[in-house]
Length: 308
Ligand code: ADP
Ligand code: MG
Image (cartoon, rainbow, N blue to C red; front, side, top):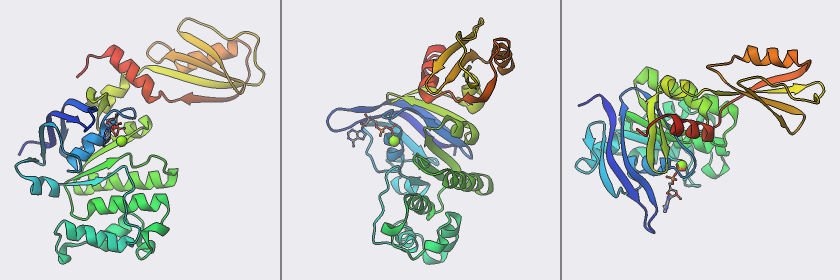
């Protein structure tokens, strides 16, 4: 087979009612990579993932999973992929152990090949193995969904916004586990996230989806290294009468006695910005950098790059 874990050609989805959620997606995901799908709400990420999972029927196009054509070899392609969906769709009357066993049964995993205990441990639910799903916290339910995606030992693991609304501890645990699956078992990982920092930290390659199309696709370094707009937010001891100003540095008052200074990292350094602030006689109570948000990134990318 080719070196791609996933190959998508001309993928379209129009929902009943006429919404065109995917407008011709071409995408390949290399084997062994951690691949990020980024995009604003409504971009079509979950539609794409649910088509891979076999939960949504595509309107047109070709999808092959681990070399298996989804239409010609549905069983093999389904066996190659495990999906942790965005929605928490758990049967409240199952316990984690029960839910994993049922899922393994659905995928035809023979009893001797089941690794229920290992999976419970991996997702940190060994203490809750016999608790009813309805008594689990949101974070625990998410971990159980991750466990369910792993029961049939798939080559590819897909995570749809696994950390949305999840506390930082669980987020870190999830990422540790995902990295381990990638490094130790060579599992290909596809994830969607809203958090740029997370994508930057986790992903080898990124595709940006917007309005049902691939707006950009590149290595994480190429894609996010391109994003040049930075903001330094300072809390002055006292708000000055006039704001500091210099070519390439734009200052703006913010609520709460803050000043936001925006600049381009290629032309100006944070040191330059702080130097300007000091030269303006401002003493600092606090300084922080601000992450570019996803919307800014889209604007920047769609301005500076041709659509892929
Ligand atoms: P994302 O995951 O990027 O937020 P989705 O794939 O969930 O995006 O949604 C893409 C578009 O398709 C949105 O406009 C959404 O409202 C629409 N959509 C999603 N699911 C359905 C559905 N079952 N029926 C009709 N429209 C849908
Ligand atoms: Mg979604």
